[in-house]
Length: 224
Length: 294
Ligand SMILES: Nc1ncnc2c1ncn2[C@@H]1O[C@H](COP(=O)(O)OP(=O)(O)O)[C@@H](O)[C@H]1O
Ligand SMILES: [Mg+2]
Image 1: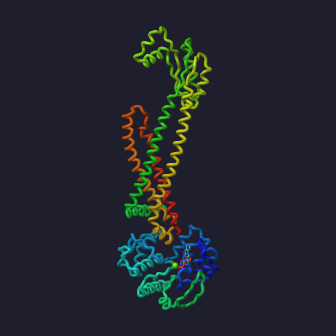
Image 2: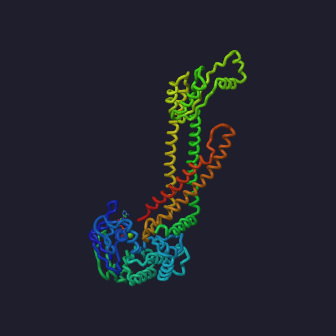
Image 3: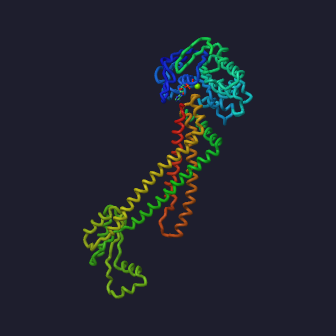
């Protein structure tokens, strides 16, 4: 599903955020991306949804070389990828329901499809009874669930989550984790950048460790 | 694809108006102000141009005729002159008419003439040309006709006037260009602010996989509406202000030529609508582009 060959990413300020990354993530896998702040986790995720292009090397997502992707096709790549951001990126002047429907409208779904999908994912994350309220009235965990609902509304092949439990208590974090496992079992490939030692140890999934832009460890059923 | 979704685009644009009423009103107010400034300048320059044309059209060639000229020769000369390129009008002024004009001009002092027995004034042809630039050329040609005593056209005044109007028009054009350029910058910056306020939505749409045109359309419509509504407001304000001003000026200087025909004012209205709407459209298109693709 995702392959990287000798990928380097330098930012304009000469920071080498990623160096010689080689990886193969198969369809349906669940991968933790761990490492200290500044290791390059967010940069790794950005390459996959083509928020940035690699300075050197190849990034192949679902058979598509993202560096060579013409900008007109980027939207179609992104329809296969759901993203959950560290900082939520919710629209606080729209309701819970509208936050999910907004992205579906943006890709031209019909009203019928939108209603069906929004109800489905809000049920899945347990927010169906809060559909009419604005996100600022939700707790942190609920806002994160809303972000997940929005990210999977389109049933993407890949779900990228950037430290989704970073600001949550252990109980809520585990709830979010269970939700992600559930989504993973339905076939979605998930990459999750995280610091959360407790959860990673408990999850027993593949762990890819980044340090100063390099992969220094890649273990199946790993620990933090 | 584009037209299928037009309903959605319009709804989004109107929704955004509704969601941020204050912002939209501030935007419209600012654009209206800029357009009024441009409009005032356009009104002033249209009127100056009419004024100059008026002065220019008063430039004429006077052809004094020899006293022994016959009526047939007059008619012949008249039609010969009329057939020259660029002549607007040729008018014959007889000796008698010239005398009456002089009497009228002298008014109370007309007794001066009683000392003279015979009418000393020559008959003449008064010629108006279409373009004052060729007045000298035409005057020179007429000098060569028979029975022409003298040709007069106020050479120095004509030259000075033509020089002045040339410089004045060029300067006006330059100021207009600068003003339009400045207003394009200002309006597109105002639009940029409204787009900036919604950069999160743009980013989310872009990350959800919306095509860039899908993202741009609601903003283009919103930018168009903001520009268009502002131009209507500024036209209404300018028009009322102008009617009022013309009235005041005419009270003070009754014969000053001013543009009052609505058909002559129409181009100014069209220019304002185009400026407002086009800059609204292009401004939002380019500003949105900056937030797409993160
Ligand atoms: N847009 C950017 N411009 C310049 N430097 C950046 C940018 N984004 C990230 N970096 C730098 O790249 C390195 C890796 O950042 P990031 O991928 O965000 O790490 P992580 O997510 O693991 O904390 C850091 O040193 C960071 O300062
Ligand atoms: Mg990060």
